[in-house]
Image (tube, rainbow, N blue to C red; front, side, top):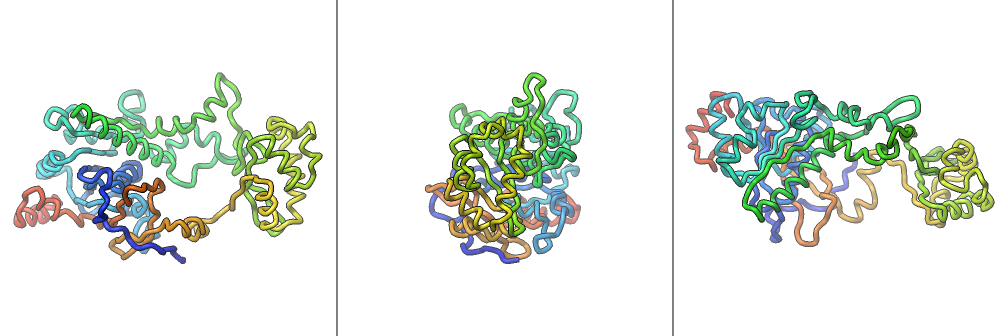
Length: 408
């Protein structure tokens, strides 16, 4: 596989300050939602200390070996962090964790329901001693309610939130091809932590953030929910096509490939008939002269479009679409995306270090003119344990003893 590494690694020593420089985050995290949240914080300059189980670590480390032996999920969500191996079930770990939290601005956790509270890490147990601490709890269903203690994984939340009911084909529901529920919760956690830090600047007080994967996904389901308001039929499952706008989706062309296109209004529909189909009279056909009618008669219209495209190559169809100012896109594979000319031309790739050498990483999407995002090493399990403990005042002898006991 070719990897587009045109740009050199961005050093953490960049002259321009980052928004979260000086902010320390301690995270008891695994899988995707919390690690994705804290990686965004690290991108913005925060020091993120990732607490992992000795010998095993974040179980996402073992999901696969696709990236030179490292797990694809882990590589994606864990750069620029420090890994502290710590057995939270050992009494010695409580002292270390307490010392860490005493220096932290933010505590993030997505442990199993109730686990943080059993460790004495509930916000109510911490706020008196650490009044400026921001605690972010990420869970499947949130605190309270009949589902509070229910286990939750990404696909289960896709199902529970109704996402599967509107995704897929008429015959078969389909999940998203990425961890969309984890991503939703992780991004709400990230943005909520930023707002909590802003609020602390005004009040001097920390706060608790309760992020639910279910509620994050239900928020994202706003359109289909309102479309089905008051008992109305929900949007039909339409495969890769838009459920309620037509034509909007993939269409085969004469060279055996596909073109994705989308129309948004009647002006574009008229231009599509005139310039792409080269049948301007179709625009006024009563079966197709509004989006609602096109949706009702989409099978008839699809035959007309596919028949026209059958004599054209992909390049010819795109040329007509561009001439008509009709939005279109390629149906890309993952390798196509690695080699995407737009990402390459805009210099969106960097190299980040790892235990297996340099790896490509996408620059965070929101580019600032004021600073460069931090893009540092993906840590090996426990790689930073000794350094972190030294910074907390532990001696080499104490660290060696903790390691021999399996505490770290």
